[in-house]
Image 1 (cartoon, one colour):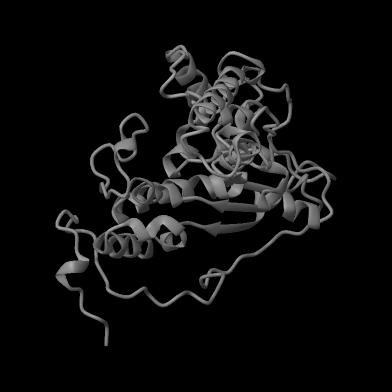
Image 2 (cartoon, helix red, strand yellow):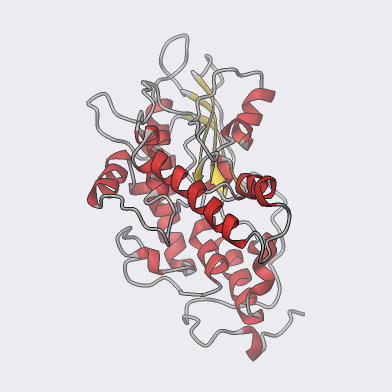
Length: 336
């Protein structure tokens, strides 16, 4: 018998269309979900592995994107014996975007020791100011503004912070326009790289263009790779395996901010949907259906899907109100 949902589990602002359960649903054990697939194995696809996703796919760690050579797609490609796996790099002072917390902590420890007290408080502030200023200057005014020249589309198309709508609609032109819209300025109180996500995305998608130089979204970029066909004839599926892990950021905002703001009007508009931290299942499904429609056009022999992992894996989720944890758990179950 299912456990009843008590009042302390329910947020008063929960939309009526969100179904609340006190227990997680039974996991699916069939990886095919009962969907039969016929695979044409003639010829050799030009691209053995292509991935689309967010920070997990791109290789985000310690608050930054930098070690992309050890992202899970790069590791899989290496184990497959595939040396040709294209991905962006972020080898910079401070190691990556927006801020490598581990690198900063290690350098701070070397500079002032393992404890901040009254005697080293001022040197600590000066170190942090100079460290962040150097990083900001590199990305906003220095070499970091120059996107490496590259003709071929990357195989790893993951970009941290992106959700379902982003992979449907955002491309390098939109990112460039966002950066150009507001000139970076010196701010001694908020020294974080402005538009760091757009700057990171440029290194992923700048080479993702059509034959007429039209900027492509991650889904369109994968479609273009699949259309290249096999090595032998140029026909057939151009991608052997396509991995898509997307959807976490349609719920992750609630964990990062400790606030639940259910999606509403404009959930599919990138100009306004940043105000929402959790997508209602009906909105999540509407976006996912559009993603599925485009993925069906990609010429790939095998497609591996994943959406929203259990948000309770976040260590600092313990800081969220009990009712919020229940709401998030049910939202992720409904979205699966």
